[in-house]
Structure formats: C-alpha cells, structure tokens
Image (cartoon, rainbow, N blue to C red; front, side, top):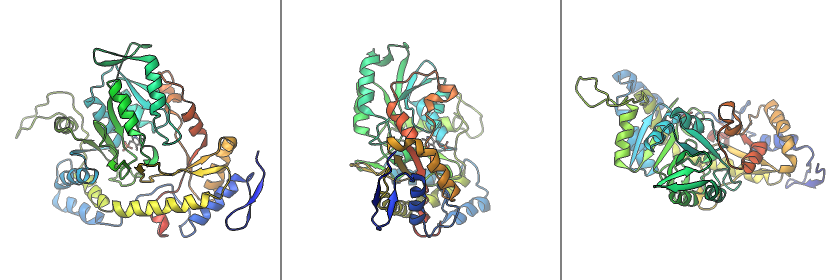
Length: 406
Ligand SMILES: *Cc1c(COP(=O)(O)O)cnc(C)c1O
C-alpha cells in the first residue's frame, strides 16, 4: 500500500494510507453548509408543484387523461428536441415498450451493458428475450464501442439483414447503451456498430435528462429512448418515465401500447393486441411539468457541486472524481468517485466511513451478468466493467447541496 505523505493544497499533510478518512474530510469540506445526514439524491420541489397538483385534485382530473399529461409530453419533446415524447408509469415501462417497438421477440438476444441498473436487463427479460452483456469503457462508464465491434466481428454474422449470434444461433435485435450517472456514451461509434450489424439502437437515457452528446440530447439519437422520473432522478414525477422518438409511427404505436392497445371509440372496449396499462397519470404529470421548469436551475447547481468536488478531490491520492468527456455535457446526476486499482480493496472501508459520518455514499450496481437470473446469459469479456464495479462510489448529488438548503 502507498503510504507516502504529501502536502495538499491547503498545506496540511495527507496520508494516502487513510483513504477513508480523507474521503470523509473532503466530502465534509465540500458539504460544510449541508444538513446531516446528507442523502445521495433527494427530490427538490421549489416551483409550481403544489399549484399544479392541486389543480388536478380540484378539477378531478387525476388519472391517465388530463391536460398535464399532454403538456408534459409537449414540454419534454421541446426540452429534449425529440419529435415525440410518450409518458409512462416509470422508466422500466418506457424501456419495455421501446424494446417491443424495436421488434424484440422471445427468440432474440439484446446487447446491454453489464454495468447498469437492473431495469435495463429486466426490460429485455419481460419480452422473453435474452440479455447479452457488453463491457464498458472507463472513459465514459458506458458501452465500449471498439471492444463491442471486435467482439461482434468474432461471434456475429448478418444473415438476410438480421444479426445472428453464431454461437447461440439466436438473432440479435437491439443494442441498448445506457448513459451511466448522466455521462453520455460514445454514441457515434456505437451507432456505427449498430448500423454495421443491423441492430436497432434503443437508448436507456433513464439517468441522463439534461445530458448532451455533441449538442444533441441523449435519448433522441437512437431510434427510441427511455427516460425515468423516479424519486432519485434529476427530476421526479413520483414514479414516471417517457419514451422519446423522432418516428411518427413509432410514437403512435407507443401511445397505443401504453393505453392497453385500446382503439379510439366513444364507448366500445376494443383492443387489437395485448397492450399495457403504462400511461402516466395526470397527478404525476403535473408534478413533472413543475419539475421540468426547474431543469436549468437544477443543472446549474449540480454542475457547481461537481466543480467543487473536482477541485477538492484533485488533492486526494488514490481517488479521482469522474468528469464529463469532451464533446459531451453531463447532467452530473450522481457524482462518481473512482478509486485507483491499487486501493480498490479500500472501497468498503470508504463506504463504511462515509456512511458513518452521515454522508451517504453507495457502491455501483452489482454487474447484471452476475445476478442469479442472468448468470447464464451470454456475455463478452467484462474486465473493465468488473474493474469499475470494484472501484466506483457515488457521492451526494442533490442540487441544493451547493446553496446549503439541501
Ligand atoms: C432508474 C433507471 C431505470 C428505470 O427507471 P424506473 O423509473 O425506476 O423504472 C432504467 N434504467 C436505468 C439505468 C435507471 O437508472
């Protein structure tokens, strides 16, 4: 272990062997004004939330039909630049419907990151299809396009316009990049791989509302994209999500599917396929409209917090603060610390020390490829995802932490 001592910028001596203590001190300094305990990410309601929700109750429009549902869809389309947004009960539902619209059937495999929240793989499994796990790159924390391209060159083949896994014989229909913690993946390169292998690109943009790739909003570059408005995300509707697409027909089909595939009719109950009761209620949409109005203020403060962390952790040996890549703009949804490989064994000690100090931190997700229901699914070499899993720690990220009110 590295026990060299060196002065930090404030002139005090930091001992690299006390990594947990140093992380606690650094967080304590960055979050000096914040109330204890400091949560990882809590919702912030500073706008028109009460007024809009009250209006739903006053007018009795609380369920899946109402002005706020339509308004949130319009506001989201305008905010993201997508042609269409279809709001849903949660982000998982948005992803499920997106993959169904991408043509995923029970015979298929879908390429997903091993390093993601479980919903990414679950949405594939809901369709009876098989997740096929792909490695991440340290540069973005998301899918590694070069490694994926080389892997597909080895194991995949395009037959009659469909990509087939030559090892399992199953068609591979879609590729699902996920913008981890708000950091956009290398979309250009991934899109190239997707085109070469006839894979439909479906973005899991659940964590990246407000994040841009080369100036374009994440979730609008793939054929379909899924957003989440869960309580811990950048904005919340309580529970909620949205499907983004630039394709008029896909948008119509998405809307139809999330409204139990009911045909428009004044009184008849006529359903032309097995749809889903996935429509976002007006109450939740009202909350969403109020939240979306505050995005600029949330993003500005999250960025200020990230800058503060970046400066402070520059002086701590053994750990680095993850910053946005060139050509991208991150929403800094959940801030990320990466331990150096040689101190990865200190991760749990860092988690323990910070949580004991009332500073909420969390490890990244257990790799989906190692969860019991997915442990037999196909996968490529996952060495980078495995390394990130050992070294990644999320630190407090609520936007109000910079103004002391959070
Ligand atoms: C939050 C999240 C989802 C799902 O969103 P819910 O609204 O919780 O269903 C999907 N994928 C990722 C990567 C997420 O972080």
